[in-house]
Image (cartoon, rainbow, N blue to C red):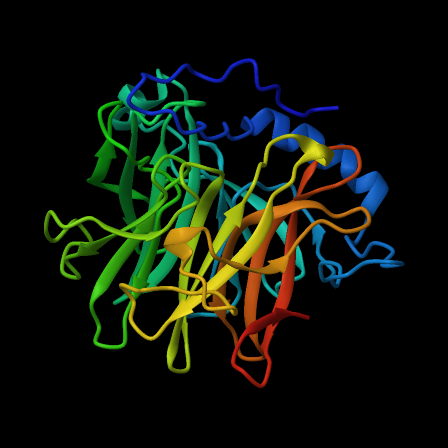
Length: 344
């Protein structure tokens, strides 16, 4: 019912024949669709007959999201951010019941308007907590364009209205072969900070950050995954044991129940790669091992993030209900005998 059409895709210049990325849903569409879906899915535990993957775990309350990121608060409970006008925020005390708390930037984020054509809709926030501060990297762009930018904001509390703009991290233009959206911060085993990002075009990129500021440290731009211009985005690097796992979303989101998003993963012993899938195929050559795909009434899972909790590593993502509403998905991550993650 609320699926986006592709007729609004922006034309490319001849130098960039790759297929352009999708646009995120507007905040109003997310909220409306989520409310409609609650009637159908309730606790988000859906029938699993003939499903090849487990269903999302039970979540309740305000569960309408797109591109969610979640962090455990040092004082207890959970903070989530997601694509919405001025970045939407939710809280939970138990990782099950969620409530909306407002927007990160209730007065707007005027510094992003040059990349959004004045829209307040901001994409794919990435939350983490370091040295007494919440860090949030997020993207500003428009549908089908790689005139895009990643920005950083910080907060001592994570509450709506408490976020301070720390500035531009990286931008991309039509003359570039990459797209500066879908950021994710990873801190490696040596304490170095890195940001991965990217969508379509030449794929997923990695840059070094200065831990003292959270801003870009140098001009190096590394490639860590790609599909020859095809549909890949939403990178997330997570360290577990002796490996760095690179999670990405393949294929297409934002088509409601017709979305084909699926979560893929590869790994490396170095944060900078090379990342390979279970079969040894490099992720820079289109490799990726499928972790979670649509099944039953779970459509197009993706836009994922991972964090460690006291019980398990936790996979957070959005998926679409049968009526097209984007909803919050949460599952445990476990690891098989070969240290490959699997959804539980």
